[in-house]
Image (tube, rainbow, N blue to C red; front, side):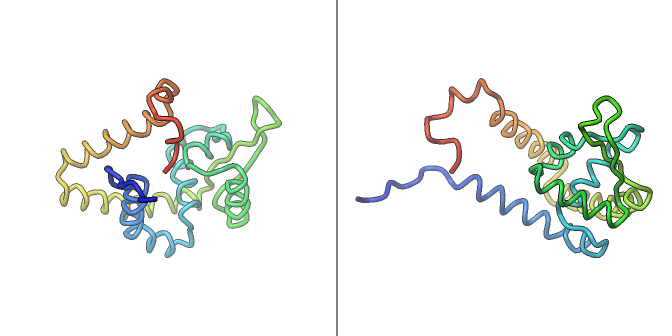
Length: 162
């Protein structure tokens, strides 16, 4: 049987390659601060919600940091051990846990945000401001399209993943 040629390029692979290209600039800074990619994603989420005195519920952290629950549990355990976050019961529902970045965690967010923003500035100079803005819009559109239940009917059966 002759394989059918693909008409479109491998979008999931291209997105992974683009992610790795961006992370190649970020990872050395993360490692210099003793952080993994996952720990940085958690700290970034907590840094973005630092003004919330009650903290952030772990389910929200998992969603915003794009981590599965079991992975998040291990990441949070290591981060708590290292003094980067603190955990406490959720004030509204003691069955849930909320987390907040400690002062040490927020210091890392501040220090890393400078080098990461410098990288984004470099990307903006390379691509152009409008092209980078378009990239954000296109990615947001693709993400929304893939999670929108109304779009499920539009995708051919068996084409959920490549």
